[in-house]
Length: 454
Image 1 (cartoon, one colour):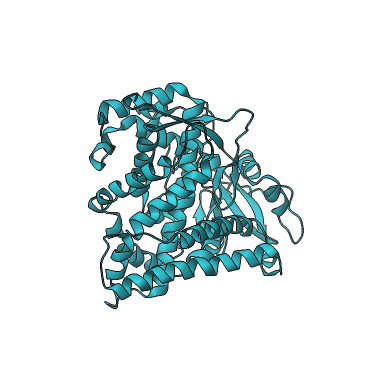
Image 2: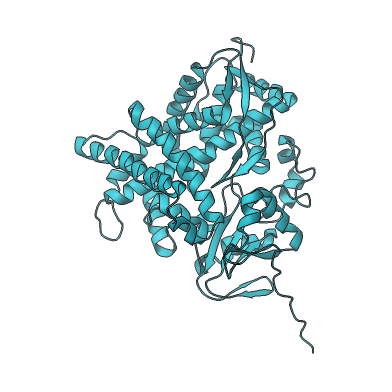
């Protein structure tokens, strides 16, 4: 009996000494990573000179990586770079038993009854932010959604006001940090040690962000009062092994994680939903009709969210077509089997949700925004495991998935009953990938909705 040799994992062309694939990544990282699907179920690239990152393209192999091999993998390069922001003691950057312990500490903040208490705060912030818009005003919609998302994070995490100067600093620092992380993922490690202005801004913003959060933590702890927000819950939490309260550094790390995740990704998805509603008036009208049927004249409440099924499909389709993840990584702790290949210890693995969700072999007419595709039960159930991963999979699946869906549903249900946003003429909008994928400048004109017109 003869053994058939398995071809090695191919390597993408274009790597350079010292730079690896940094040039095509810097030129157009989304186009480059998407093109990797043409090389088969797995392909190697170089993010570090001389070291291969295996980009996994096939759904079954992605599922194997995220679920079956999870105990044998560390978080990898993307999370190491994010760890420069979050701190090494946050849930997102933790691995193994440490991750399990931290996840249990945070899980109470994302229970159904806790999320139910946050909806009123989310709705209040959406009403407040959009209440400052004016008919005919041209808005930078992504920036408006960043402000709204940060407002909602502050309301639900702190359950109290953050003074205006600190709020503005948070917004500026988050923008600098997320742009910096995106660059650091693509560039060799030695670049971030150079005396560059971008490195200086990144380090200054990271220090300032932790200082603002640290002050809020110390102030709340010193006051001795509970606020009902996530921060108050973290202050009450105890380490399961020692019984001791969480340290200030870890609390800051977890709050920064929530601030980044709840601002950067949520803002982008909200902006894309508003963009697609403007481009697809039939979807827009159908969604408004559902809101009118379910809500009547009253504001959205937590109990309404499960009944807003078309809204759920709209958000799900935005998470498919405009997913914010472009290079999510893992690292092998030992030698592992991935499909037909034996992957050595210390190898970086990665996958791209943005490209995966636009694969025509998985999603018919993939560039069309079509919420109704999620109502085709036979098609949906026929999707292979690992084909649609809006919040990841396995033990590292996003802990805040239900929180995020509730937040986005509450925001959209509130905003579009007050406003229609029209695309400004002559503007092109494209996805751009930094730490996450987001729309390029998205300018839209606000048109007020007459009371009762929904």
